[in-house]
Amino acid sequence: MLVAFFAVGLSWWFLLIGVVFLFIGGLGYWASWRKHFFWINEKGELEARSGIFFRRSKQLRISRLQSVDILRPPVARLLGYSSLKVEVAGSGDSRVILSYLSDGKAQELQSEILSVAKEERTFTQSSERGNYWQWRVPNGRLVASMVLTTSTFFVIIGAVASAVIALWGGGLAALALAVGGSAASLAGITSLFNFSVGRNERGIAISHGFFTTAHYTVSPMRIQAICLVQPIAWRPFGWYRIAINVAGTDQSGKKSGPRVLIPVVHEDTLSELFRELLPSCNLETEDEWIASATISSWRFPWQAARLAVSVTPDLFVVRSGALTRRLSAAPHERIQSIRITQGPWERKLGISSLHADSVPGPVRLNARGLGSNVAVHTALVELDRMATARNSQRSDQW
Image 1 (cartoon, rainbow, N blue to C red):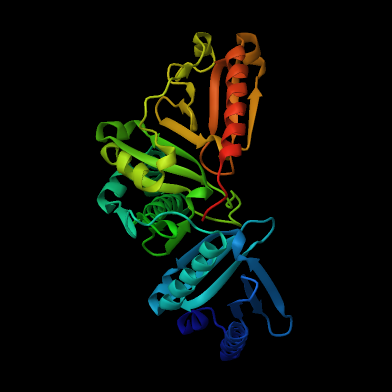
Image 2 (spheres, rainbow, N blue to C red):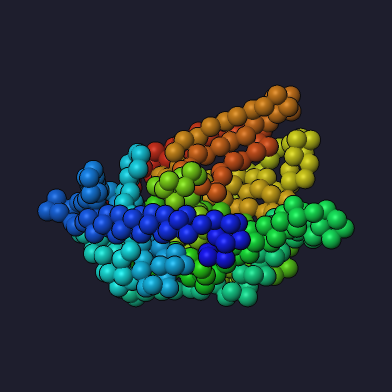
């Protein structure tokens, strides 16, 4: 810092003023942290109060709890601190972030909040199958799978091309582009390092991260839809990625949460994962597929033979993808609505698309290329299944 000041010819006064402002800012932040209180009141609410001159108070009903996640940024990890993010169902900013807790305190508070939620929701999940089950993704397999994705191919090609342009006199901009692309690819890989997923008495526990670690605890009731994704380069290895839509999260990042249940898994392990984590979403069964219309090959030439939909007693399942295959599914009771759309080209071909709407997330349940009459009939069947499933659904459990 001193070298920089002298290099640009600034005097000691500027340095002194900068140090004073830094000290005052740090002191204010420390005083604000000392005035940050939180507790669970007699109503079963998590109450947080903060502020020195302007007091802020927020109450979150634990009975509407969506998630309790532990986050550990790099600097906090070095100092042995964690942040606890508590989210409940509701519009707006329905969350509280409790920062700079010790690791032990964060885990203790997470357990206490989950215990209160468990009692208020009359948790009935049996623990006879064992207190904990865990599965880890080998980091070597994770790196190999990320390298073999289409997006990584483009990043590598772009980085190499930018580096070549920079060496041939393209300037610092091309070199910065190459370094930035490589850094973005590396950040994407390291964010999923040390990935583990498990089941305990609180729900599904997901943990990952190399520099910044994240720990999520998700109720199985919050998982609204799942998708098995298999890029073409993964097929010889039998690898899949399992993406999920989780209630209470959105695309804007205001209510962040897990979007991936497993980043890469071998097909031999799928049955065990579904049995332990999501037994109601077992995709191993043979379904009776309703294929797309033959004429849809004019609209979807690459994947018409792959497009299909299936309405099983428990799930609405959609199959799609040519180079990257996708198998998406959602329980009937967790589908928000059913839509049928038809563009100008589809209208001329006599085909339609059937959409089962879920909560925001990476999973899309779009059955395309169906004959229009078939789409209407399938939509009516699905509406009946949705009504039946909701009538027989038990009360929400954590």
